[in-house]
Length: 186
Image (cartoon, rainbow, N blue to C red; front, top):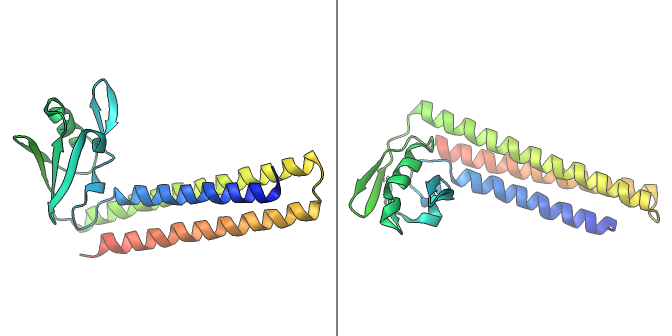
C-alpha cells in the first residue's frame, strides 16, 4: 500500500466508527418515541438471535408510544420477551396483532443513566478511532520497511493520521454533547 492509500483507508474506517457511534446513540432514549429506540433489540426467534427490525414493523403513532407489528404472529411472545429483556425499562403490552409500548416519563435519575450509557458509547467510539490510528501507523511503518519511502514522508503521514484521529475524536465528542443535551432537555 502507498501512503495515500493507508491514509484514505484509515479515514474510511474512522468514518465507519463515527457512524457506528451515531447508530448506537439513536438507540438511547430521549423524551420522545422513535422506532430506532428498539429496532436493534435482539429477539430469539427461529432458533437464532435476530434484530427486532428484521421481525416486525415498528411505528411511533404518538410521541410517547411505539407500536410493533410482527411479520409472523408466532413470534409475538418472543418479541415481547426480547423487549422486556433489552434493559431499556419498557413494558410491552400485547393487543391482538400489535404490541403497544407506552414510554414512561423519564425521571432525573433515568436521564443520568442514559447520559452514562452515551458516555460509554462515545468512549468505545474514541477507542475504535485510536485503534484505527494504531493500525495506520503500523501500516505506514510496513511501507517504510518495504522500501522506497523516506522516513520524512512516513513522519509527515503519521502527523496526518494523528490530525485525522484528533478530528474524529472531536466529532464523537460533539455528537456526545448534542445527545447529552437532547436527553437532559425536559
